[in-house]
Length: 451
Ligand code: CMC
Image (tube, rainbow, N blue to C red; front, side, top):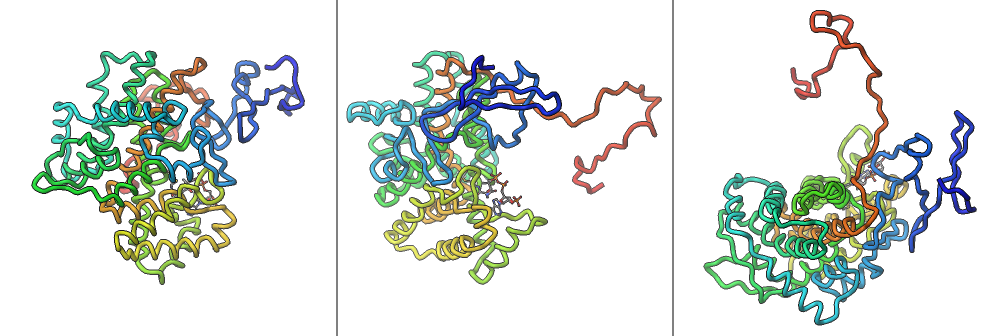
């Protein structure tokens, strides 16, 4: 507890005892005021309750800043629209990892480093054949990225900055290869070798779509769109998957295993899986005539349906990534000469939702996933690969946060507390004494209520 308080500090009064406690205020370089509760429990025995961490900052970070009310997203101080316009993904990776935009020499060296880690160990490639061909590529990603930990563990000293750097480079380099092979495996096609003559985005296209029986010409429009998608997904501060990576890494776990845990978290439809869910939803809606019915469904508290690609925990205005993607969506479809009825339907849905009282009142705006699926579909990606693309782009964010956490002298194992609502102490009853005195247990949750 701070010994002397200032006018910026906070006072917590426990009405049950009448005691007051002074809690120090914290301020970042930008953004909200914070109250430091880290000493609250040791000094007062009081815990705080914040399910979903709506009001809790779990760490300090220099990487990404979001102002959700104004729709602002910056990486290391650079607004996302400027990075989207002027950068390439490799440059953004360097920025996130090392804190500065690279000089031309630094960029060339970094690019070369990444290119020298794109191949997969032959033994790792054998992992694929253990999966069903029909397996979801995100399931394959969780398994294969996690398996990297079996290849790069013995030498791994996670406190050594050089080893952290190599681990970060390996993750960024191998994710396109691992993701594209998940797709090729599902088709029963041979795995192409990565090509160092290509940029990161071009190589990803080559790995995904080339066929060894034919030449593959890179379409620059597609490469530009992939580059943009990767930049827009590169980092988003303490989202569910990044927090998962940090929590897993806080125990000192292997970084590849930590990234695999991030991929698992990303997969859910409330997070990165939403891009896949948006296209499925547009398919369900079918035609603009049905939009009002689905808007109504999304508002029904007794219906679990939500408008996928809408809403965000932090953004209470338009997601700036969606703004960039919306423009790019039209550009890509125009250049490719695609007249996509799903884009028309999505835009109509967006307009109706933005004028709807429920969506206005709850500040639900389109998020990045609303448009990313439409672009990826136009680029030829199957729906099941959308979240894989998100994972490839986000891998630099995960590993940058992992590295930042390990370099923070104050980092401790993440260990949240709980509000316990279970039984108070009970006396153990031997088996022959149980019966009517014991509470009946409902097993319906276990068997889905069917027995
Ligand atoms: N459609 C209809 N109602 C919604 C939606 C939606 N998409 N999103 C939120 N709401 C309602 C929700 O029912 C709740 O209503 P009430 O106050 O009456 O209970 C209110 O808005 C607040 O929602 P919440 O679930 O408490 O908010 P959250 O911050 O916990 O959830 C979210 C954020 C993104 C999970 C949620 O908005 C959602 O499920 N959206 C659809 C899935 C989606 O598009 N996810 C991608 C997120 S952006 C990219 C990423 O992170 O990967």
